Image (cartoon, rainbow, N blue to C red):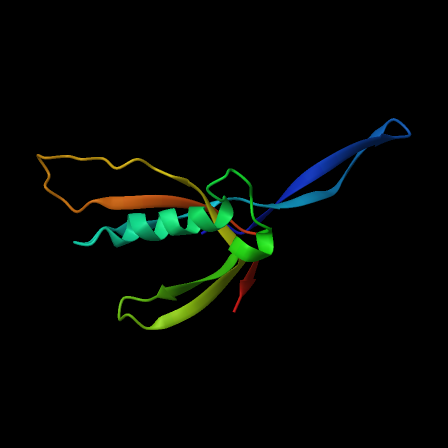
Length: 121
């Protein structure tokens, strides 16, 4: 889970270098979804992309497709110890499926999200 990162700015004043706080940035975060019998994860992802871009190629307003995402951090006893709220999220990229017949594992969908803000709820 990413949190804010801060860039530093450096200035030269009277032949001395001064460093100050720069811009705060919030990196992408990713989530892993396990596919089921009904292909729910892929259908959910495609539906969200459909809210971002229309069939004619035009884009909707961000207020239409941005949603809040809550992340619950659990301890080993499955008790919620912390909650993080990402505000104004939308998916930006999904990793392609990797079919490995030798492992016969579950199919997973890895999705990266972009968010406006992050809060401890």
